[in-house]
Length: 179
Image (cartoon, rainbow, N blue to C red; front, side, top):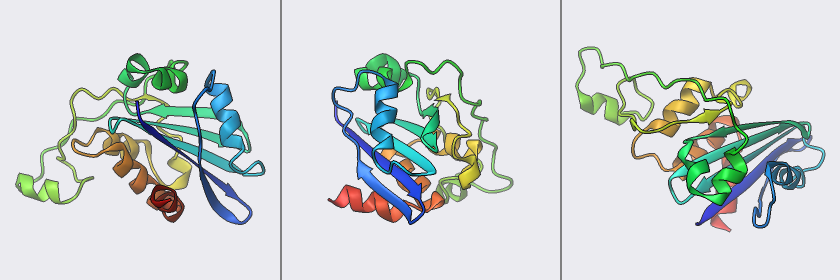
Protein backbone atom coordinates (compact mmCIF):
# COMPACT_ATOMS: atom_id res chain seq x y z
CA UNK A 1 0.00 0.00 0.00
CA UNK A 2 1.43 3.32 -1.00
CA UNK A 3 0.60 6.49 0.87
CA UNK A 4 1.57 10.15 1.14
CA UNK A 5 1.27 11.84 4.53
CA UNK A 6 1.81 15.59 4.78
CA UNK A 7 1.68 17.49 8.02
CA UNK A 8 1.03 21.21 7.89
CA UNK A 9 1.23 23.44 10.92
CA UNK A 10 0.30 27.06 11.43
CA UNK A 11 2.55 28.86 13.86
CA UNK A 12 3.55 32.46 14.51
CA UNK A 13 5.58 32.57 11.26
CA UNK A 14 2.78 31.13 9.11
CA UNK A 15 2.39 27.67 7.60
CA UNK A 16 5.12 25.05 7.58
CA UNK A 17 4.91 21.56 6.11
CA UNK A 18 6.74 18.26 6.39
CA UNK A 19 6.22 14.75 5.19
CA UNK A 20 5.22 12.50 8.09
CA UNK A 21 6.41 8.89 8.24
CA UNK A 22 3.61 6.68 9.54
CA UNK A 23 5.55 3.41 9.33
CA UNK A 24 5.54 1.55 12.60
CA UNK A 25 2.93 3.76 14.26
CA UNK A 26 1.05 1.66 16.80
CA UNK A 27 -2.11 3.77 17.08
CA UNK A 28 -3.69 7.09 16.14
CA UNK A 29 -2.22 8.71 19.26
CA UNK A 30 1.28 7.90 18.01
CA UNK A 31 0.33 9.40 14.64
CA UNK A 32 -0.81 12.55 16.50
CA UNK A 33 2.57 12.64 18.29
CA UNK A 34 4.33 12.56 14.91
CA UNK A 35 2.08 15.38 13.69
CA UNK A 36 3.01 17.46 16.75
CA UNK A 37 6.68 17.13 15.74
CA UNK A 38 6.05 19.08 12.50
CA UNK A 39 5.83 22.31 14.53
CA UNK A 40 5.71 21.76 18.31
CA UNK A 41 4.44 25.29 19.05
CA UNK A 42 1.75 25.36 16.35
CA UNK A 43 -1.69 26.65 17.16
CA UNK A 44 -3.10 24.37 14.44
CA UNK A 45 -1.72 21.17 12.89
CA UNK A 46 -3.27 19.15 10.08
CA UNK A 47 -2.24 15.80 8.66
CA UNK A 48 -3.41 14.93 5.16
CA UNK A 49 -3.03 11.24 4.27
CA UNK A 50 -3.79 9.86 0.84
CA UNK A 51 -3.62 6.15 0.21
CA UNK A 52 -3.51 4.23 -3.06
CA UNK A 53 -5.15 7.07 -5.01
CA UNK A 54 -8.41 6.01 -3.37
CA UNK A 55 -8.67 7.20 0.21
CA UNK A 56 -8.16 10.40 2.17
CA UNK A 57 -7.85 10.93 5.90
CA UNK A 58 -7.44 14.26 7.67
CA UNK A 59 -6.34 14.65 11.27
CA UNK A 60 -6.43 17.94 13.15
CA UNK A 61 -4.84 19.09 16.38
CA UNK A 62 -5.59 22.48 17.94
CA UNK A 63 -2.65 23.67 20.07
CA UNK A 64 -1.39 20.08 20.12
CA UNK A 65 -4.58 18.71 21.70
CA UNK A 66 -8.13 17.64 20.88
CA UNK A 67 -7.54 15.24 17.98
CA UNK A 68 -10.26 15.36 15.32
CA UNK A 69 -10.40 12.89 12.44
CA UNK A 70 -12.16 12.71 9.07
CA UNK A 71 -12.03 9.93 6.47
CA UNK A 72 -13.30 10.07 2.91
CA UNK A 73 -14.58 6.49 3.03
CA UNK A 74 -15.15 4.01 5.86
CA UNK A 75 -13.91 1.25 3.54
CA UNK A 76 -10.37 2.56 4.10
CA UNK A 77 -10.46 1.30 7.72
CA UNK A 78 -11.65 -2.12 6.60
CA UNK A 79 -9.21 -2.56 3.72
CA UNK A 80 -5.86 -1.57 5.18
CA UNK A 81 -3.76 -1.43 8.31
CA UNK A 82 -3.15 2.29 7.72
CA UNK A 83 -6.87 2.96 7.35
CA UNK A 84 -7.60 1.00 10.49
CA UNK A 85 -4.87 2.89 12.32
CA UNK A 86 -6.24 6.31 11.31
CA UNK A 87 -9.98 5.65 11.26
CA UNK A 88 -10.45 2.58 13.45
CA UNK A 89 -11.60 4.58 16.48
CA UNK A 90 -13.97 6.83 14.51
CA UNK A 91 -17.48 5.97 15.58
CA UNK A 92 -19.55 8.84 14.33
CA UNK A 93 -20.44 9.03 10.67
CA UNK A 94 -19.81 12.19 8.74
CA UNK A 95 -22.78 14.29 7.69
CA UNK A 96 -24.89 12.86 4.93
CA UNK A 97 -23.96 13.72 1.37
CA UNK A 98 -26.92 15.39 -0.24
CA UNK A 99 -28.12 14.02 -3.53
CA UNK A 100 -27.01 16.30 -6.32
CA UNK A 101 -29.60 18.79 -7.45
CA UNK A 102 -30.52 18.96 -11.11
CA UNK A 103 -29.19 22.11 -12.77
CA UNK A 104 -31.97 24.61 -13.40
CA UNK A 105 -32.50 24.83 -17.11
CA UNK A 106 -28.89 23.89 -17.80
CA UNK A 107 -27.44 20.79 -19.30
CA UNK A 108 -24.87 18.37 -17.85
CA UNK A 109 -21.93 20.15 -19.47
CA UNK A 110 -22.59 23.20 -17.27
CA UNK A 111 -22.20 21.04 -14.16
CA UNK A 112 -19.07 19.38 -15.46
CA UNK A 113 -17.29 22.72 -15.90
CA UNK A 114 -17.20 23.38 -12.15
CA UNK A 115 -16.24 20.51 -9.86
CA UNK A 116 -18.35 21.97 -7.05
CA UNK A 117 -21.36 22.86 -9.18
CA UNK A 118 -24.79 21.69 -8.12
CA UNK A 119 -25.65 18.66 -10.18
CA UNK A 120 -22.07 17.36 -10.19
CA UNK A 121 -21.87 13.60 -10.35
CA UNK A 122 -21.01 12.02 -7.02
CA UNK A 123 -19.74 8.53 -6.35
CA UNK A 124 -22.73 6.65 -4.88
CA UNK A 125 -20.64 4.19 -2.86
CA UNK A 126 -18.67 6.73 -0.80
CA UNK A 127 -19.20 6.50 2.97
CA UNK A 128 -17.32 9.36 4.70
CA UNK A 129 -16.74 9.09 8.44
CA UNK A 130 -15.65 11.34 11.26
CA UNK A 131 -15.72 15.08 11.78
CA UNK A 132 -16.59 16.71 8.46
CA UNK A 133 -16.55 20.14 10.17
CA UNK A 134 -12.85 19.98 11.08
CA UNK A 135 -11.92 22.59 8.44
CA UNK A 136 -15.02 24.81 8.73
CA UNK A 137 -13.28 27.57 10.69
CA UNK A 138 -10.62 27.65 7.96
CA UNK A 139 -13.16 28.36 5.22
CA UNK A 140 -14.01 24.82 4.08
CA UNK A 141 -17.52 23.86 5.14
CA UNK A 142 -18.49 20.29 5.85
CA UNK A 143 -20.64 20.35 2.73
CA UNK A 144 -17.69 21.44 0.56
CA UNK A 145 -15.40 18.80 2.10
CA UNK A 146 -17.95 16.04 1.55
CA UNK A 147 -18.64 17.26 -1.96
CA UNK A 148 -14.93 17.20 -2.88
CA UNK A 149 -14.45 13.73 -1.40
CA UNK A 150 -17.45 12.29 -3.19
CA UNK A 151 -16.93 13.90 -6.58
CA UNK A 152 -16.32 11.15 -9.09
CA UNK A 153 -12.93 11.44 -10.73
CA UNK A 154 -11.33 13.51 -7.93
CA UNK A 155 -8.26 11.75 -6.57
CA UNK A 156 -7.26 12.28 -2.93
CA UNK A 157 -4.25 14.31 -4.17
CA UNK A 158 -6.66 16.63 -6.02
CA UNK A 159 -8.82 17.02 -2.92
CA UNK A 160 -5.78 17.77 -0.73
CA UNK A 161 -4.51 20.31 -3.24
CA UNK A 162 -7.85 22.11 -3.39
CA UNK A 163 -8.29 22.05 0.40
CA UNK A 164 -4.79 23.36 1.01
CA UNK A 165 -5.24 26.17 -1.51
CA UNK A 166 -8.47 27.15 0.24
CA UNK A 167 -6.91 27.27 3.71
CA UNK A 168 -3.68 28.96 2.64
CA UNK A 169 -1.02 26.22 2.70
CA UNK A 170 -1.18 25.09 -0.92
CA UNK A 171 2.35 26.22 -1.78
CA UNK A 172 3.81 24.30 1.16
CA UNK A 173 2.07 21.07 0.10
CA UNK A 174 3.18 21.52 -3.51
CA UNK A 175 6.79 21.94 -2.38
CA UNK A 176 6.54 18.65 -0.47
CA UNK A 177 5.16 16.82 -3.50
CA UNK A 178 7.91 18.18 -5.74
CA UNK A 179 10.72 17.26 -3.31
